[in-house]
Image (cartoon, rainbow, N blue to C red; front, top):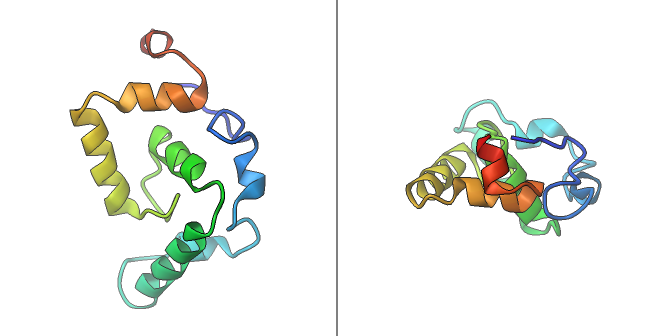
Length: 110
């Protein structure tokens, strides 16, 4: 899998620079735990994501690169895990990845 840390291969070119979260504390999007103040942080992080113009690119990046922690594209760990299961069951995982990183499905399996 090709991973482009600059974000230029995932939907919106340079999506990281346009992210609504770019100037907020990273700890808000990577809380420790899922209860108490961490649960409050997750709600706030998802609210920020809800206003973000590059939310889809962020979510796609997190799915393609298998980000298991934090809030990405308005989803938490459990929600992304569910999405990955659905994509895998439907055979869409490679197609989704190829659509966002600019590679063909056949090139990815080589």
